[in-house]
Image (cartoon, rainbow, N blue to C red; front, side, top):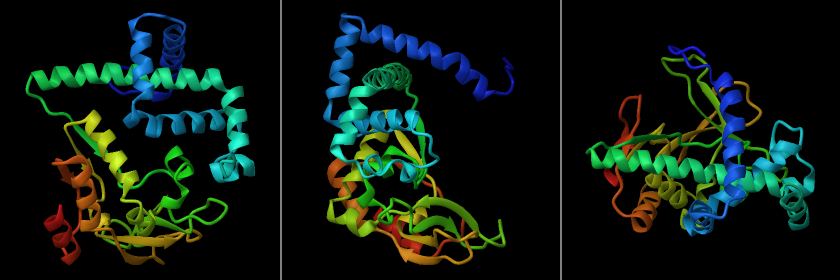
Length: 268
């Protein structure tokens, strides 16, 4: 394989079978490492996202569709009987998926702990939005602006600017901030806790979107037709601060300062 430029497709073909093999050996073992796996997957902080991610991956591995909104309706809408059938039929896949996550967590924490002992802080990177075809959206539909079929009604982007005359159409589903606030921003709190489990601090891309964001109709072909909407502002930061405590966030922003920007920096 080339050493100056990474060919991720080739790396995946080589590494993924080996990682799966290691995960299967772990599952069949009875030593201390297996006991650590059991603790990992039963931890409340991990369980909140791990089971949904494993189930989503299992369905995505068996259903030929570009988006979960195109899955058979019982799976799309998370009917319990349909999900139980998947869990039973894909149990080996799910168990291997969870074991792989554990192995990553264990190895990453070893690197993280070593860095901390050397006085090195590790910075992570968090996109403000998540992909539509994801366990995040499928398992938390009420937290996003979706129609009854699970498709976005509004998507992310930015208006025309110096980079593009037609704006930038990112296409990620937008958050339903009112529903999120009613639920204490629990989805964001969990996301922040997970981020701080992995990193010492991290950058949030398009940070200004937490104050005001550009909303584009999902059927639009460019970002020109969007409108500005008010984000969660201090309500989100208050909820995160209460649940997580002091946090170190790098606020990314590439545009001129406005009232929106000043507002969000005051409350963060």
